[in-house]
Length: 434
Picture 1 (cartoon, rainbow, N blue to C red):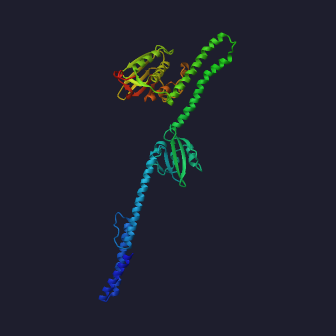
Picture 2 (cartoon, rainbow, N blue to C red):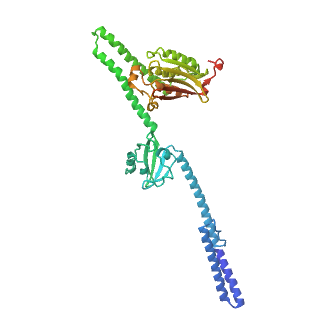
Picture 3 (cartoon, rainbow, N blue to C red):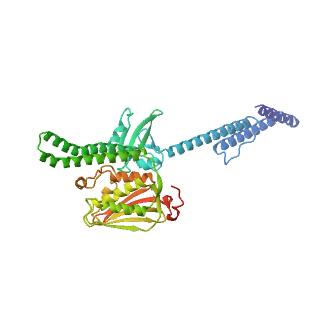
């Protein structure tokens, strides 16, 4: 401010002195004051234009109050710019963090409109931001359970399981969370696997109960009918049936124990080179001893002599299950092909048959416990419904996959595909220590 006073005092003094020389002191003082006021106003106008558009207009240069104001404004502007940059960085970090979340997060406005949504919202809820910005969420998710959750007042703290609008196979746990007054967050988590496991657990208990009920009912019926004074001929007809039912229960319990050991990893793996060609040949001979074997044509197709690094007992169990199933569930004189081949991507053991085939909607569930395509036929053959579940877990322990394909009237194909890292050349077997 001192610069302004000194500048005004200097101008007035010079104008007064010159006015005295020309005997027009008042006139010179008036003119100099007017010009100074006009100059000051021009600087203020320049300051105003600079404030309106600092990038286009330069700041005014005038020592004194105007220059102090410019410096102060520039300092505040730099502080705001730095603060804005920090806030932008925080926003980017927040968006990156929420984008990385597997859960869908949707910010809702006061009327339930979409204010923001992360990437997972597209996959789980079908909400795409910014396309669905300001669209009310109840127009995007029409499930009645979700509508009740959205309109509940106060919001329910307990989450609800809702079917995703994207896919009927997706089950979401949805929850509304209040924040900052009337702000609301919609959080959705994929619970499909949990729901599936719960269903499998319920089905497992129901299936075990059902499978054990029949043999136990048979045994209980005979035991109630007979006593120690019953004639020998009655026991003679009953004992084979009772023995068969107890064997069936024993087989089921053994399969359940094997499956449990495989799932829990209790059994140690002993991976050693296995001669696949010899193993398939032995399994084919064993299959011919089954009572269900009725002139089936078992063909061996060996396209490779490579050995496979595996647990021999587990591999034999898995392949036996597939081959014995092919014998049990194909008609008389059906052709069954056991193939061992290696291609560019992996090594596959295939069990193919030309039986009646399996409908496509059954294929995805064949490896579930107790799942049967034909329950009546399975009861006749004495199957436990656990064979393919055991096969799947054995292959999983060997980093392999079971691929199933089938066509009605053509036959079924079961492919056990192993990574090529599991292969051992036959020529190197002798050099491998036992």
